[in-house]
Image (spheres, rainbow, N blue to C red):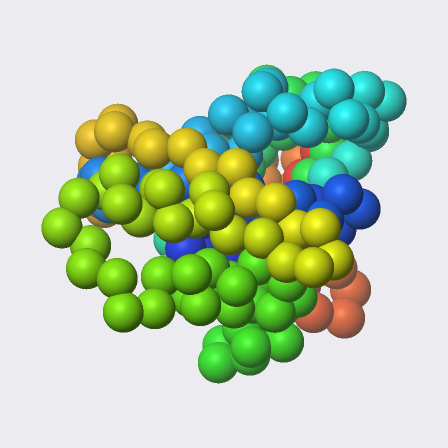
Amino acid sequence: IFIVHKSNGIDNCFDNKGYITLGTSKDTSEFVCDNLLFYWQTELQWVYPTAGCMLLLCDGGGSNACLHHIVKHDLHKLSKLLEINILVAHYPAYCSKWNPIEHKLFSHLHRAWKEAVFNDIQIVKKLALETSTTTGLTVKVNINNKNYQTGRKVSDDFMDNINNFITFDDQIPKCNYLISQN
C-alpha cells in the first residue's frame, strides 16, 4: 500500500518509510506519476517484486484531483509502464486530515521544518532526511528539477475508451477506481 499526498509524499505503510519529492516546477499529475515511477524503480520494486497492484490513497484536490481526467490518463500511462494495476481511492474534499500520510509522515516533517528558513532547497532536503521517529520512520528525499506544463488536456480518444482500462467503483465512482495496465 502506498499513500500519495498532493504534496508529493509517499508513505510505504508496511516499511515505516516515507518518500518525498521536492519539486522546482509545478505540482501536476505528471509530476506525481514521475515521482511514483522514480521511487518504484529505485526502491519499491525491490521490496515488492511480485506486486500486481498498487493502492493509492489520494487527496481529493490538487494535482491528483479525482475529477481531473488528466490524473487518470497519467496514472494509466504509469500502470502500463510498471506493468501493474493501480487501485485509486480519493479522499473527499476537505478530508485529507484523515489520510494516514498526514499523521505518519507529514506531521513529523512539519516538526522538522518548524522555524526553518527555506532559502535553499537543499535545506529542505537536509531537514527532511534527518526526520525520524522512535518507531523507526525514515525519510528518503528526491529533488525533481523537471519543468512541468500546466493545463494539459486528455485526448478525445482517451475519453472515448476510458471504460476499457478504468473500472469505476459502483458506490463512489468519482473517487474510487481501478486502472488496468492493459
